[in-house]
Image (tube, rainbow, N blue to C red; front, side, top):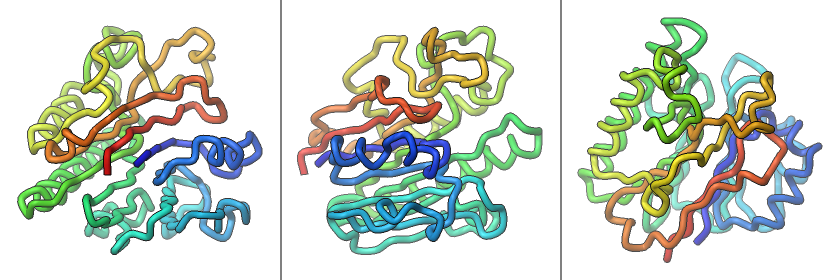
Length: 255
């Protein structure tokens, strides 16, 4: 089973850049999309009801052109939920939770904390809410997969210029410490399961043309519970795929 996730920075813009063709070529069993910036009725027809997939969408209740996630799945999930069970976070359209026979999948566009102290606090609280929900599922014996744009680089090897960004949201000590705590619940960073080397990024600042210089950050992740680790066959970063300031990432599971 191949699972792929991608922050597309606007599904309509990505569509014009060949997203549908890429999706057919990549042909994932499950595709998680973040930052769609569109309500379901604004999706191109080809992406609202794609051939061979069940499609699910979550968008903000009030703010148009902001946030949003989508899930495409060849197999129909047993159950699909929208949000983390808290009105404070769920109004921003950031989370789809799909329940499958072998795992529970979280497709999440995590908040960005750079705008203000208030948004950083919101981001940290969002993190903690996810931890509570995940911990509960793990204690119930469920396998869990969490993927998306986490908006934080975990280690110094996960961004090109760590020293310059120590006081920037996205690499703050408290944000990185949360990832440590989250993994300690019983999860692994799938990409680091295979590749411990630096210089592998998933996001580049468009304003500074950072991608041309490969001055990037690895802020997009697939985390899986340790119960799935024996079934993990591959983890990859598609840094050659253009169309967004992020690139797709994915995993392959023997399921």
